[in-house]
Image (cartoon, rainbow, N blue to C red; front, top):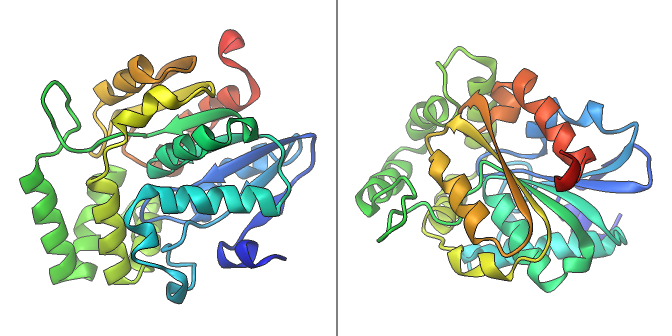
Length: 271
């Protein structure tokens, strides 16, 4: 196993000619895909990894300067694909990883046959003629709460983001992975994500994009999926799912897994 693979806890499962790469979002790790993986391993080589900063990675490897922008994560993704000698993949990016995949495919479109963007947003802050869902004051309060008492913040944030009460398995699972992050790293990652603005890169994306979105999501309003569809220069398709929450692959697998499988297996013209 190479240095990059080890640092990101890379796992390659299954068999098949085609490669599917699964990338998680903030506060989770590769375990967020546990309901999807069993449905893929018979037909695909499945690549799982943890983004740097996840609770499962070595915090000593987290470079605060490198990961102050999403480009740092995109370089990591490309390094993983290079080390595994992946020539082309179907990339499934949840939340921030959808934008990380978009950045990576601009420099290496040959490595991506398509990108499936789930719960994705190019910008979380509202702007003139753009609704991202948050005002700066909202984010400042979020960051302040994270810095003041991280454990307490996790307990309150998890059910809001997942959608559900603290007793649900999905909320407990997200609480676990969120709390596994080192608090200062979690705050830095959250600031990088929530203050990011990737709108300007959408016109540079040439890889087909499948945009999947929950009908109700605290972090990403449904209108954002349509914004992505209208502003990506590549061919794209939107499917709004009846699921609730920002981590529907965890909270509503019965709804979401069939949709994901359809978009992984079929191209836009045949979905």
